[in-house]
Image: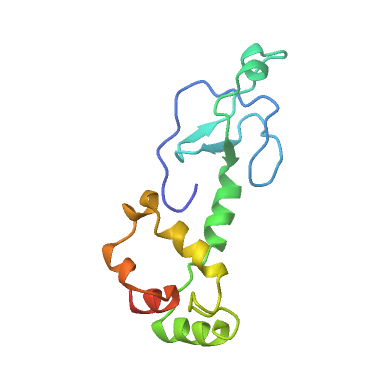
Length: 141
């Protein structure tokens, strides 16, 4: 059973048909535990051949083996957020290539116009519009 204890076995009918696990791309066997996208644990029944429900509308449509999910979950490592020093080093490394002076580099004007358009203005914080260099904005954000 996966580590974060998904919901218990669903009593609904499971008809996966010939669909495949999205992680290992293998078919499910009768009696094997599978998880749907909501991490509900289900057991694959032994459908009689031919099962119209399995071939016409598999349920759940997207699923994965419980063991595949557990392997994925155990192998996942979260990454650390970059520090301001990391961002400064990145900015220093890219500064010779990407200058933030619209007078010197005309191609940045179209990017700035797009980012500051009436459509994005509602989405961005107001203090963004006071900055001329996006790298400095993200360093000081």
